[in-house]
Image 1: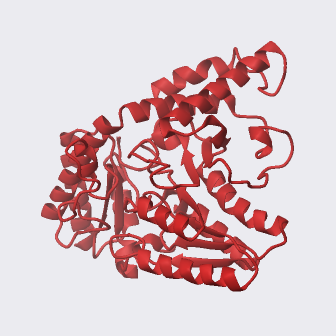
Image 2: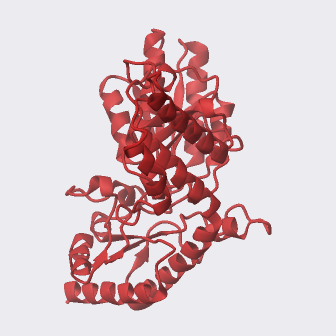
Image 3: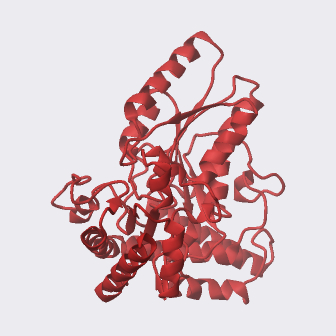
Length: 409
């Protein structure tokens, strides 16, 4: 098989597996217990917290382990809403984009159904947040705070889109959040370990990440909570995670997460450069071979670099798009039909978000960037690993071309 699906490319790394092994058997103690086996597990959890904190250049006390990216997103949003409710003040104002992951969009919709104000900021045809509209919304909220009871804004915008790979301008979003006193959360599940993230420079208050996106184990993630941001507990029970998230820690998962993160950060630029080269070649070949094919999101061949610096050619090569993300629309065919034909040739790909698999609705991301329903149904997403060879790339291009010709025929 050639794995080009975001959910399939992220196999557990040997590094993570080896790190986890002792805690699946020999050191299986409860990290909250005082006996020796428990304390060995506690030490492993805290060393893992220190490892990840050092990679993000934050304090270990700002890192909280969770069950994955979805939980982290829910925690970030829910905690701000609950903080307002507990103070019996005007409810929070949730501000997000129209292309967020369902973990954010559906959480916002849930609170909206309970009366919480939600603003959804549009994006342009490449997927970039409309910063002018964001500032207008923040200005209006700032004016209301001076004339009514106090409220708290939460801006939740993903670092990089999971479908079309667009890297948002987090530095500018963070600046606006700081200017108007809003809390800034970013869903960095797709970006963590793939592209540089500077929490201080971007003025991020809350950050979500997930282990399995960097070849760590599934079912574990993290939420970064900036020191000084006082939020209520998310899960109630024991005193784990400094009383904010009750429940026995997933020790093997946390240890595997830290090992995978350390490896991902140390190889980020090397892997990224290889993926960028494959990504750009994939786009070139697909546009050459398939009439009518259209790139969704940023076209690297036409975009300006991001963070251009002679000291960081990797940053310049990103062109505001995740290094391993390829998304195209194939007019005249349905993406799901192409996937079935590719599967017959041993190619595992995707037509959108893995979390929306099985949905009959077209991609909300493609609709939000201005694609028609027909175009949205024709989307095909490929997630590239640096181990992909040019021979496999060419085989995939031919397979997609043959599938499209058959379906159009």
